Amino acid sequence: MKLILIRHGQTQGNILNEQGINLFTGALNNRCTDLTEKGIEAAKKLKDNPIIKEISKVYCSDLKRAIDTARLAKPGYELNIDKRLRERSLGDFEGKYPEDLEDNECYKKYFTDEKYKKFRRDFIQKAPNGESYTDVITRTDDFINSLNMEEDITIGIFAHMHCIRCIFYNLLKFEPKEKIFNLKIENCEPYVIERIQDKTFKLTSHNLDDLFNKICW
Image (tube, rainbow, N blue to C red; front, side):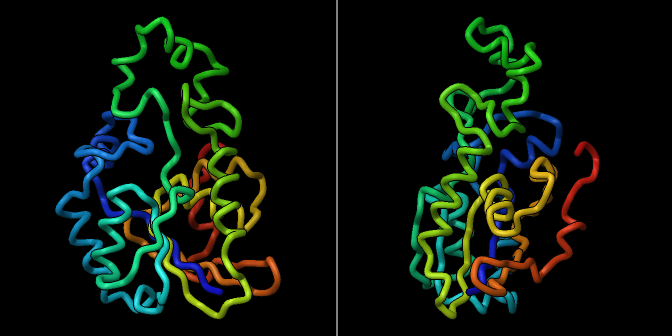
């Protein structure tokens, strides 16, 4: 079993965040999360990538940006769409900017209280009606356990940054687990994880240590 994990192409929301404009996207599925021209071109280029050519079965998040990326990277392939691969939900905050929420009495604590402010990077805390990292770890682990690990097959998984981080954690079991918050997952970059034996997996496309932003763990 070989898993190739691919984060969707660049979106409008990605651009805003890179510019320091914090739009809460999460599992949002609208124009703000559509692929940009750059994202479309990067997804098309994946089609000729030797790693992507190895894929014989495709799994995909049910969110449009992941589906569009998968269709461009593996044209003509059946997509096995699975909600367990969608991005971490930010619940009531999705589609909003922090300034839209900070003065709201119901949400103020998420921007002023040290405990609640952790909702973006925490295993327990979450946005109202959203998901914590533990929630995403649990559902992605359920997805992984649904696969037949004895099968000699290369699977492509088109998903999202936080989802892929959690799959990394489930398969590679790195410590401390807080490193997950600084795991760099680039758009349209294939990450190859191979089953070595039984339930032991290894990242073979990259040096795992190189993928961690060593700034706050």
